[in-house]
Amino acid sequence: PPWARPAAALRGRARATARGRPRARPRRATTAGSTPPPTELQLAQKVAATERAIRDYGRYYVTIQDDSSEDDLSYVKLVDYGKKVITNNIRGFLLMQIVKYLSHVHPRPRTVYLSRHGQSEYNAVQKIGGNPGLTNAGEAYAKWLGTVVPGEVWTRDGRKTGFSTSDDEHDDDETDDGRADACPGRPLFGRRFPCADPRTGETRSRAIAPARLWTSTLKRTIDTARHIPHPVLELRSGGVWHQMSPRVYRNLDEIFAGDCEGMTYEEIAATHTNEAKLRKRDKLGYRYPRGESYLDLIARLDPLMHELESYKEPLLIVSHQATLRILYSYLVGGARKDAPKVEIPLHTVIKITWDGWRNIHEERICMSDDTPNLQHDGQNVF
Figure 1 (cartoon, rainbow, N blue to C red):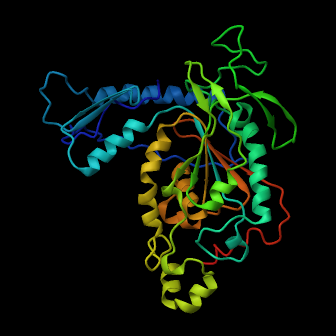
Figure 2: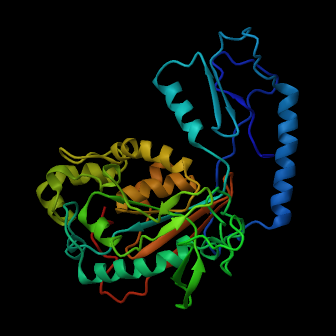
Figure 3: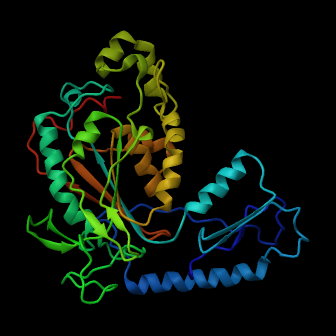
């Protein structure tokens, strides 16, 4: 594609140039209402600018030769973003991790939905950790999520943000009027589903596309996702897709509070005075006694980020506040030091869409809920 980066990268003994190696510009997060999605003209201008940058690269860089004259260099070549990967003289943990990551990334638009579990019994009494079930309010959110997901996550209209997110091999098999483009005269089975619009409440049969679901291993996230339907869809390729068949990952579990599991932060401050002070001083690096820190959480989530980067289908992640803080910061390009301060409210779906390159759009879909002190779950005390 025109926005592709140079094929040669990670050169162990890179060839020096007069201008040095160009720096990648960081992704900037935008929220719904603050910055509108890019227009077609703006996207065309960005594509043209990227094409000019690629031509400039050609003036200062040369392609790795295939005649074995440069076998002493360390490099990796990516052809069509992972369809073909060529590595040479790659040794060591860090280089192998970079190769693995680059093998997963692709420039296609995609959408990720983040949701905390419904209100748990511990949230209601401001305790942390544990494996409690849902309160009545949490169960109501679980049912609401089960009705919202088909219309919001599975349909093309639900994922519209100004640029297409239907650029994968499974999507767009069927139009809204029921016609299957791949099989004229025969609609693909399972590709229509009664979907409710979360904004208007209207329910009607809609064409749907494959989507994915992740949860943690803890009861409150599994219970929150249990009302989401799982129809079987026929794919254009001839196979079938079990819609949102849940993948349960230990990596998505809440940060482990160790000796402080099942306590409120007031109890921690009273019984572990020094620990409370240390956590206030460095929330990112602080590790609970016999527990985990946010830095441990980052290491735990690293394999899942590789998996997430490889997906083309929309993905819903039902997890916990600390875990979602790290995921959110990663997706929008936030600073690591600010991740523990990110607000992830209960009974809210955070929709993050990006065009595979630099443009990020965020929207928050909230359930109408009058539960008293719902957001005062004791997890933002310090």
